[in-house]
Image (tube, rainbow, N blue to C red; front, side, top):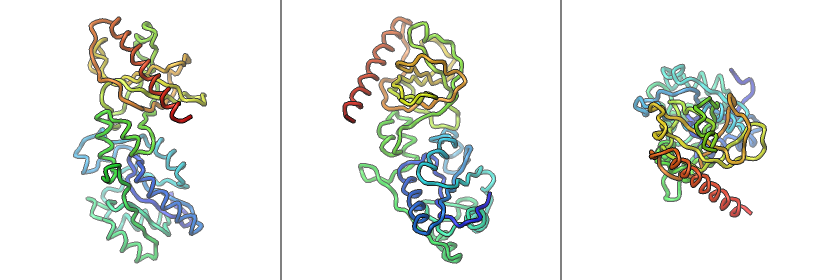
Length: 307
């Protein structure tokens, strides 16, 4: 894919699309409006085997499909997405010439101060600035956004927040709720026998896995305009023996439709309790009733605060 018209280009990995990334995209959008050109974004799809990940796979904060959708909402006209393996051996100069100049046709470039490019991450913002100057391309470094304690927001910190179950603080740094958009699979339907039918989804190994336990969540049901409150259980279901396989089960409060085979987005709002094993299904059912009431109270207070 090549652009025949000049663009304002935002460069980055943009793995989680947090509010710091949003600032970079909006800088490109402002430049595009000022120069009368479209906005392009460089990002990656698939699992990027970056050296800084140390071989760990569960690092992505969203699927590529969700990323592309949000980038469009933020103002991207074109998304240039690459498999990391396809460009990892380019020198910084080759990367700039082939992708930024030839394919993206950039008349303006912006990025965060920690942006690295080219084989081994040898290219930094100082080199990028010099390459842009040599080509007569506008360039701007976007300062980092900071959290409430003054620490720059980073995807690595957001990952740790999610792994700790602190999805509320992750929301403040992402600018949106941490969500998982996944196909609904068939399960054992044990919850249905207890009055708690669930949708079953499997979190891919390349996605960040939240702390095991029960969350108050909101669900976007295909074909419905309103989001449904729900309780989401992430774990290995120790009470009913899932053979150690981790699953995400969500009971959607007030919804009775069939969602098998459909792709559903679940937004995690608040951690309610850790995963635990119960002595009987009756005890589990009582706890599920309590979890449901807790979730309903959480969203009731949320509605009141917005009114």
